[in-house]
Image (cartoon, rainbow, N blue to C red; front, top):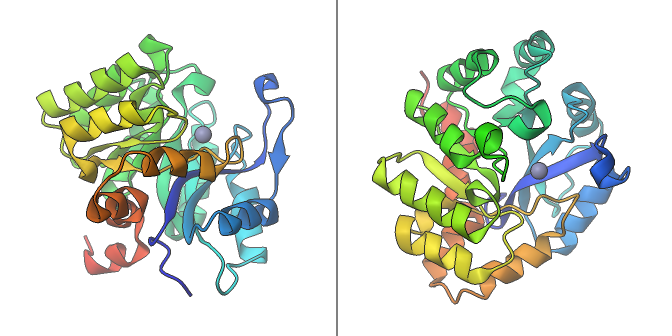
Amino acid sequence: MPDAFQRFDAHVHVGAWQTPDFAGHASDLADVRRVLGQAGFTGALVMPTDDGDNDGLARALAQAPDEPGGPRFLMAAWVDPHRPDDTLDFLERRGPLVRALKCHPSFARLPLTAPVYRPFLAYAREHDLPIVTHCGRWREVAGFEVALEAAAEFPQVSFVLSHMGGDGPTLVAGAAAAIRERGLDRVHLGTESIREPWVVGRAIDVLGADRLVFGSDHNLNHPASFLAVIDALGLSHGERERILGGNARTLFDPARFHANPT
Ligand SMILES: [Zn+2]
């Protein structure tokens, strides 16, 4: 079995999208495994789509386990703050399978600081699970500022801000600067959907390569597109390794849960 974190995609969706924006796009676990394998990925953090079907994904992972030589999949549970009991019930039943919690304030139309998210932030703290949270241009709900407010309130929890804090040059720069200024050492930026190498490069200049985590947002995007962005940066071998897997290892590696019992 190759090392999952040799080349790891920390943002991958499995299933069918509900939002009309994505025109009914869907892929099953076999599709996703084939695409990631062909793109040379050895591991990924997989999560449901906006249907929030944690049980469906857990079942699919159990029915079709990782193949020798293929990518190894770790699961993030989708947090639905409108059905908190469903999500908490899933965590109660399948908690050991879960390596991160995925929050999507834009789809939920609720900021991460909303009281209904608190049990999940507390769960992440108790179980040492990173929060992967969507950040976007809807500033009052999904802006990086809101995510950083939650991060400051839960300093023991690691966060990955998807789309590098907001998917635009000024938002990414603002997120990187704010993380540094506020000394939020456990906040990372996920590289999914950033197409401009210079935007990624500036964030590395501010935060260092240790704080970037490669992601593609497959099944919506293709991982090779964003691998090309990283490769265009001309990073040192060590920096590239950390962004493409080393940093994900420190966040999601199942082994670390046994190494640090709490
Ligand atoms: Zn996504």
